[in-house]
Image (cartoon, rainbow, N blue to C red; front, side, top):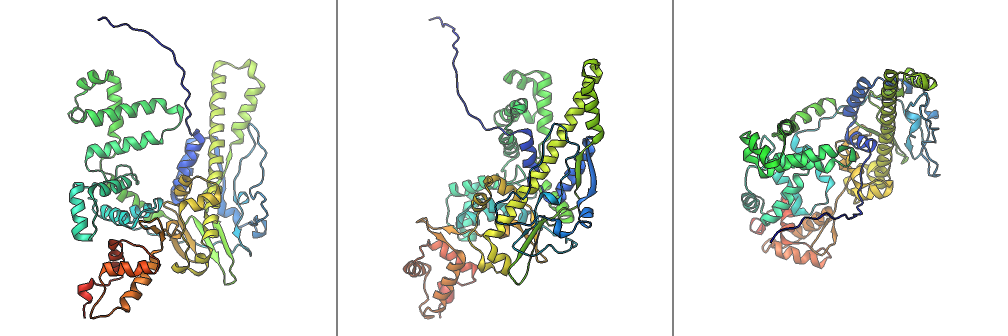
Length: 503
């Protein structure tokens, strides 16, 4: 029976969220700690002649009395103030006048030398990213075990079934392979992309998927299409890729020689050893990391906070470039083609400089509001430095307080530090996560340990309690826990099993 061909036309309504170029730039800046941010500013100054610098912020601060600094208050007044906008303002300086000093009273002390901080090993760097997830006790233990099982390349070199058995016999953790698989997917979402892969093929796919997920702007449709084809090559034609059989790939995918060469070149840019890169980055950060926030308290209960400026200079748009555009505009009708191209180039550089300056200002405002919210929510801890005074705090709490998205708060808190009364803390340490039991109740681990210790101390040493009995006793006191959770806390406290405690 012959087939008929026909064309139909239909309409489809689809809503998509796309990030502007400035939003994408801001996302990248938010993720950078101060040392990395300094390098990015220097790079922008070199790449864009329309972006110029003035005196470093700290040099200007020395000539600025603290009374000139806007103080935080609860009046609801916008601390940043309004700024007149125009097509090409003569200057777009940013400085300390853009942000108040967070303070519950008092004035800012003199500038002090900021200490460096050693971020430790890449394992600690990976574990610091766990704060972005609210994990159950077992998930946290699985995740830490998986991180410790990474080889020098950043791979998991054993099947999930083998890892499940190891968790049973080494960690006394009774979980299913599917539970381990689910936690492995969490690890694979960590930075750098590709970490936790079980093969080179999976490592490449993880990096391609990460890039696809990050591309939101319609201006990157070509790049998105490239990545989709690259994913097809790696997932469905991996053997042909390894053997560099470009002719067969061309025929299977309907591509030209030029396209295949471009795809191979792009895939080769991916890192097949993410563990190497992570060690290198950790080494660099250990040498250059400085606190992003300076927080000081006094015995009267006052807290002051300010951002660390590092060596970031004041930025402004080049007056020479602004004057060039004005001259072009005054002689628009008489311009040659070359002059029009020159004006387009100049305008593009000015707009790029404006966009970068606004992104820098927004970065500082976002960091300021986030840290202010953390201080407000953990005020008791900031004043006492006592772990017992911490309240339950997750990223969502800070997001609600600031009005920012949870992903924004996560970017701010990851890989950043605060200098609190002379001691450096990672921002992740200001968060306290409680866990939920099987009934959905929130459980404070500190409370569980205190009760467990009390029960064991008061037991009959001739007939010590088994873990099952401890579960029953805790339930009588309002805490419902699984037996393996009790065993976990018992081992954390260094309390032997029932046989080891038998008198």
